[in-house]
Image (cartoon, rainbow, N blue to C red):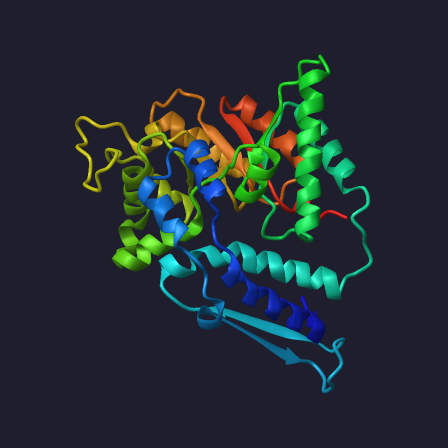
Length: 338
């Protein structure tokens, strides 16, 4: 994907403005009420947190041809440096801004017309077919306004489905964008990310046991069964499932559990998330895994990789047939479909 010099200049200015973003008191109050798993200490930390892009972010532009015009195309390089705790929150705004720069300066043959209705139709189709889904499209959205319109359309779909008297079983459960969750009165939805497992591996330098350590620290922080959708593919799902079979740590403790007394992570976690590979092969893998562990609860599989309505319906039917519970995190299909 090439950007123009004009896009680069705009992007550079937007990145500088990230230093002005701070959390507001009403946002902290909303988080405390809506997300009780976030500790008081963490919310206090957020009050004083701000990004420092002038120190932490380096953006460069390499033009393909000589010239001073804003229309000259080229490649950008974006590098973030700093402590993990100080830079972890750059991922979403930077990726969203890069996407917005492209569609603002390079691919400009589009308008916002029809985005609310488009999202509403998709939401209604999913709900009618029994799909439980959330919106995961912040990183690759067309722009902020598109994202806002999409959430509006999904909320309208949810309201219409609730009042039409047809008894549809699907549900729009919320969005991974906490800002829009607050704005539109829906639930903030998310799972553990790849970077959690990667970060734990890097900090401990114990890559062989990184999956188990990441599960242990996550459970210690939030508690058994809280935010309990496990992402399995950071270091490969087969490796992850070996750790998933081990006894789960107790809430508040980073010590290894007593295998004779404690349930396994597979038992205490609500389910898993499929984010790469063949979804149906993954379903088969998890069906066989849960069966081998004598786990009869209808565990959840959250599908989140390159979804659309047709795929969601297909995976729902297959997951139902396997005796598991399907859910969907849908991104680009919602926020960048024109």
